[in-house]
Image (cartoon, rainbow, N blue to C red; front, side, top):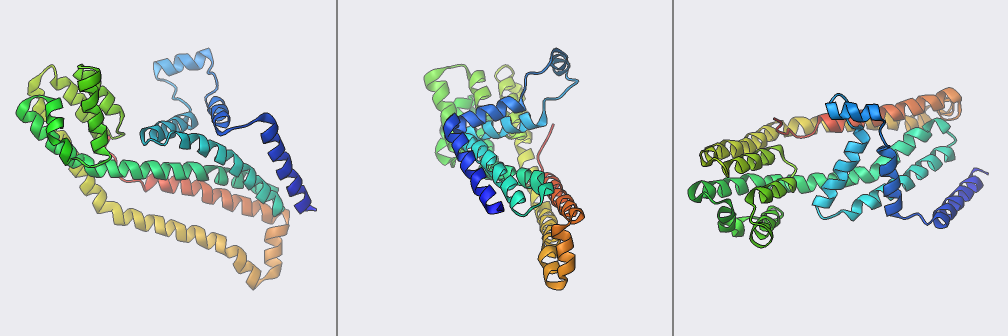
Length: 308
């Protein structure tokens, strides 16, 4: 009978999607609208005074969307939102299929995060690739700029030595300053927005200040040296962070492996865990604990980032 209910649920879901004409773009707009509901007058005043922060969910979704646009995969955000909603439904169906309603929020949240996790990995790979080339790029451009006092000329002299994707970003800077606008400060601001790196942002801000005061160009090289310091620090702790992640995966795997282990060792204990109300609650608590600890694990095992 459960199988019949699941088939009916899936058919009904497909019918609703077709009837309402839901598309990835529509779903994305609805999700963004729900996550960023209209704030009250009091909330807007507190936001303006800096006494209240924007909602973390809204900030994270906007960051993922902007990062995907920067990588040239803006359509992937809409697909991720639609896939997240679909997988959330799949998680609910799976929890119902194993007859454990307490697992519905756990499975729904876990399955819904899968597309965004993939999107963040794509963004992380792109940013890591940029940061690998950023140190050399800023070093040679800064050296040329200190010699000729012209940032456009400095970039043009070294553009052939740069590697993608940094080369494409600086090529756009040259094209904007040559063909669109001669405002160097504005071009540098646009360049700053294309790379999500605090040291690069500081370098761009200093470069803008150098357009009014040439003596400040001596401070550019120490800023570039920070990229080397961050790279060396990350190299030293890389093994430590990897060991921490492996240890977490082993512990989480051991918790999940206890379920089939109970089935082989003691059928009564297995039945008590899977088919009694108390056992289902225990499973839901363990699932939520694994999900929450995974989020914290990914947060605390990220590479070091420079912050002002």
